[in-house]
Length: 452
Image (cartoon, rainbow, N blue to C red; front, side):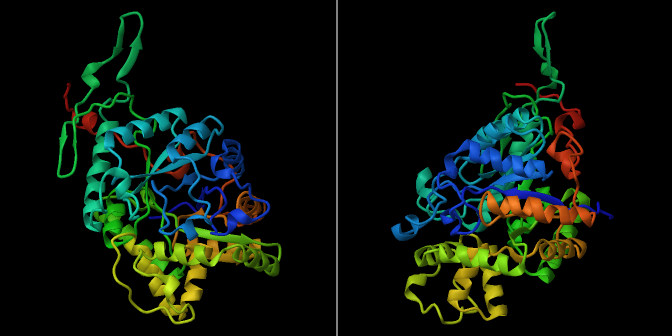
């Protein structure tokens, strides 16, 4: 199937930037994580460049396992995503708003209601990045000792998404007539009871808010394990993935599209948007010096602590010889299995020492890292897009606001010059701006009459 020749772009917003040492840059506000004006400025930069969306990651816990690392990272002082995006909905007009929320420790009714509210507040710009919890420090925050196993988390996630979609469908689009003359506010013949009973969840419904403007908020997903790919093929509309290798990216893209077709889905309704960390310089040397400066800001406790977490807490890098080669295998983790595999495969191909691998994780967390001029960065992006390893990119600036500003001012014009990125918005909703169809109401489509 032919796709549009223009790539899609999102940007992940983190207070200091994607690089682990970014918050120490003199131009990065140290308190940005809890400054609404700072986030509004970043959103305005992205919206001014016609990005499709801003993307907020989230983990509902402190992520580090020792005080040395916790003391030196900037990730533990920030807003909850739906709260922040609700505020930003009134300070933006066109850009999509992607909130990360876990299916492991939320309840579907609460989350469906909050996301529907965000979609109404923003006039149809909400999206949900669907994740399963993957950090060992989350369970005790919710009265549990440890995470459910990997496959169980995905099974619950699949049921959770179906429940959320059912809740969004419990009112038909025109159910709320609000007729003051007759005194009838809602047409209850267009109200449908979900009454779900499943393996993991029991939810009666109905939802006490009108169906979202988009039908459903756009469904985003980021898993790349076998279970994650199967989940994405069936349910996700945007797939955020990590892949620094072009060949592996092409394979992932082809596999996902093929699996999605098996569910009767069209290629252009499942968008693959890998992460890219662009470090932009007007010369190659300037870009390299930027990265070296960020590396100098990153303490060894952060390097080892972050790498231990990303590899799934199966290592203790404080006790290994960092100049020894990374082994071909590590114990399997119950946390983010696809990221562990990606990083180990890369380390083996590149013959990385532990020191090189933990530096790579600090710089990019396994995503595509491109250090160079605007032309060089555009070359990589266009090549990845043209070779069908991506439908677009989730841009992960190393620092904010500097690297986002440089990307907008230097790389985006180069992409436009090549006809690969748009110059403005084409519709009001995020679905319209991503080329995604609006889902029909399942109950109305089936002619179901089901009232409480």
